[in-house]
Image 1 (cartoon, one colour):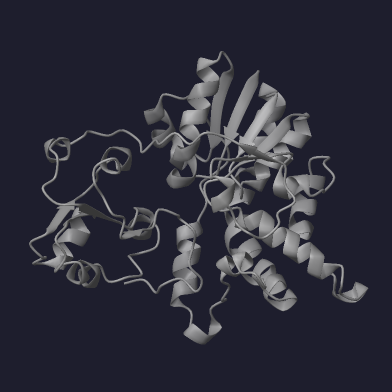
Image 2: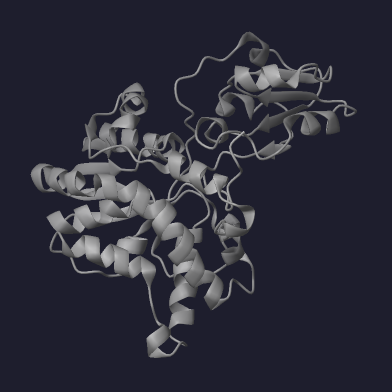
Length: 339
């Protein structure tokens, strides 16, 4: 089969796909990765074939713009609320779609690549398109060329849970209030390529999920879930000598990811305070921080080891206790103001 992996240009959304892409390639399938040009070096480093589609998105600039808005003017939506037993209200869900998710995130990352992604699929004719859960342009492209398509989750399926709650609330509203910002946007983009809107453009024909069911979002998602085995991949990595030596004390890993500093202008938590809070414990704190962030800290507690990067799949098997980990590139709303 020909299998296309599609994602907007966000490194952390793509790298989780790499083991599956290589497994399918090793099984004899023809595999390509499609994304915006910015992701080309990251994909090339995995050894997978890359096809550029469209232009790079401007999400960091949008986040910075929102961050500069007055605090009482910033759109506010907590997506984790969809995992709560009671869930968000209709007003919260509608405002989330209308004011935050569709205009400030999903349109921003999808619209620049839609036309060329559709053209790529019609030219290359993949049998299957695997897309990360907000690259809705890939679902349109798949249906435009007649390919099957599935979502590949990188975290809790909050997107499908939110959609299920939204549609349930929508049915209870009077006709004049049953607006649907997501369907309106996707329906318009799909129609341009001869595709009718359906919920498969939002939730895929199936969902690949490497989280155990017990760790999934408790809210119903009404998706066809296909469990897959999790295989860690953190990009090119060198295991340092200190990591090959058994530690004298338990390790605590402090990882705040790379997206906050590369995309969002800085961390939303005080790293120095976190390290100070761990200073009295009989542990070795391994904190992965860019050199620029390390320089800001000055003196750190004696039990802290600062490193720029360490492969988590090599660090995690050593005796560790996770303290704080944030590798999800989801945008906090309201986003932090630029430093």
